[in-house]
Length: 279
Image (cartoon, rainbow, N blue to C red; front, side, top):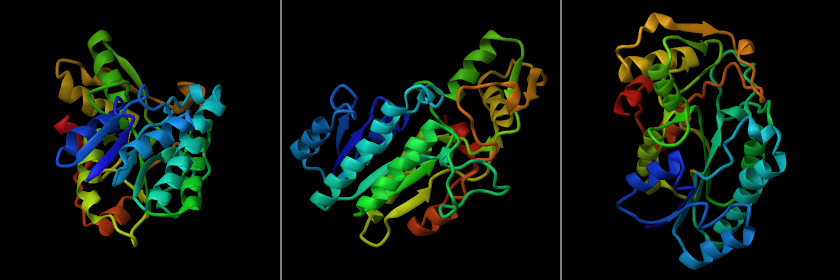
């Protein structure tokens, strides 16, 4: 199968290229196709005539999006809408990735795919607009919401905590925000299993995260135990989210329920701690 993968310099795109070696992968980074340029998007698809398009490329700077809403919406909503239209025209499936930040965090239990959305910031709003645009276009489109994505490349929470633990003797970490840490390699491994099962009857929105959940504080402890065993774990102190002000508001609860994706594609997941060990 010939597959276009966008954003291959990013965490998920990079992992997908590494995982899908049994396919003919067209790796596309921002220099080759900038998602704010609609003509480039259309030329890319027309040129390669793929059997599948996977779009992990996104505007992901959650705080900066508050100051750049127009750019965030162009990349996270307008571009996916155009890709979805082109995929429909070409009669091919389209895989897109979204986020836990489409929810406001007020629910006391994990979020299902059918739960009402209410993003707290521009980034979440732009990703939700992308979801809605894709669904309106229709076709064989798959939207995989994921959360707290990390890997051993790029800029992410895992690498930040690993670095800080080597520079500081103590750390203050938010303990009242909970979600599901999700490795980019976990995402890629599941997409590899899902691709052969894509068909006309199973498109839609799915939550793609491993089992379990964590606070940022708990996630940090696991990261440091595994990467810097010499660090005194008692010097990691829990703090409230309000004590760590940020430009964008984030939900206190963004745990995603993953039952539907496991049923739809006959998948078995490990917990997030096991996925962290693999990194």
